[in-house]
Length: 293
Image (cartoon, rainbow, N blue to C red; front, side):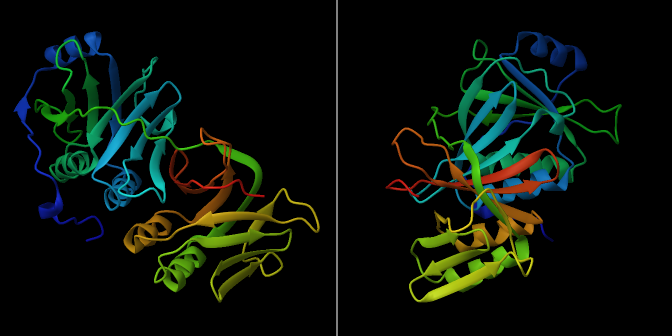
């Protein structure tokens, strides 16, 4: 089963499950600092969460009026992954302020997965630091059993680690289909080193040492945008851990490569964006040590 996960891998998390009336939920809504209601019976969301927990146990949960992001807390400085969800993804999105915290991503995934298996396919995320600053309240409802009272779980809030994914610079980009990206991962993941990517107006070349993989626009192997004749630009990526980068293209038909805007270090990085449906994306951000042309 595609969504099976070895539960023994998950960090132990204190989760309480109990019944709660609609009246109590409505009172909590009126007091909440942040409240989001969305359906969790969508396979893309669960699959995207599965990708994220392959890479990091913890994630920053960043909620703004325009976006919800789960940004991985990485075990290395090679890259940062983020699941980004736009407001239309949600059934109900009343958030009008900023809210940030760090959570155990694996524990959050376990709660979502277990509740979905039990038929509870909608969730209210409710956090009120005036009531309990150390725990997020997750209230689940079943569309199949409307008469049943909702179930509630608690998710531990950790000190915010302020992970950052730079914004996209849309001046230079290219795109390849997921099968070709999976092939690149297969060919190059044995080498734990940076892959150098060169883009011209006619081709994209992935190079690692003596190994080169060339995709051409003429053969419809890639889409190339915003680069002039005789011009070239460079990207850098890294495709380990292998399992993470195998799962990434499996959730998306195409992957897109962009430069990032300059961030706090003054250098430019690479962003891989993998759309999951219309309103969800996985971003992978590779910071560069030196500015790239």
